[in-house]
Length: 256
Image (tube, rainbow, N blue to C red):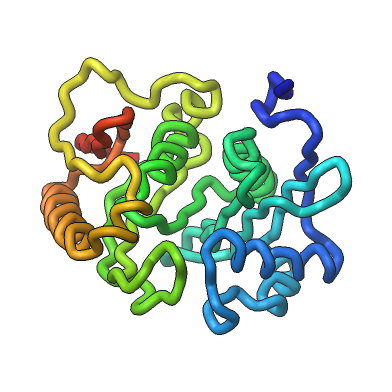
């Protein structure tokens, strides 16, 4: 499968803002398809319509036939007087995964932010999902130093399945050396350096959620407690390692 060497995206796709009502409506379909959300859990069409009007955006990944198969959406946000973007969701539908679209959409989002004078994007993700952690930390260069317990309350989705909606907050400092390394496909931390802390998570959580939910609950509690303890000690997630048998967050002291 041929890829564009400059972007890493499989050829045959284009990334651009979603502009028409039909394109924005397709984002609702994608939410249902990827996360299995019922109607009341969806980000509504009117939110997507307004995002680009208020300093946010909805970027889409389109096939050669102009079918929307992935998107990323963000809204403007502030920490005190510092402006940043909060990325609401990123998704690529089944059959179009592992083709560079997720990273490509985030890099397009980064370009938009930098052109607007914004140097940080934040988003939340499930601590137990190794694939998301690998993208966020290794392939994008984000760091993590906040844990939100049951962040959204009960979430009715195929992926959550009754678990508390615990989330990590990814901080993507767009001009940082580690982000530049990640974009270039290089390691974001020295793999030979011993981390100040490490936390093991499941390699693949979905089958375990279906077969042994109580084991997943116990795992979530353990991961929650360990990460919270490290964050109290002012450590941040700076690395992630994953193979077929094991996956670990690596934590180190970190200052912007």
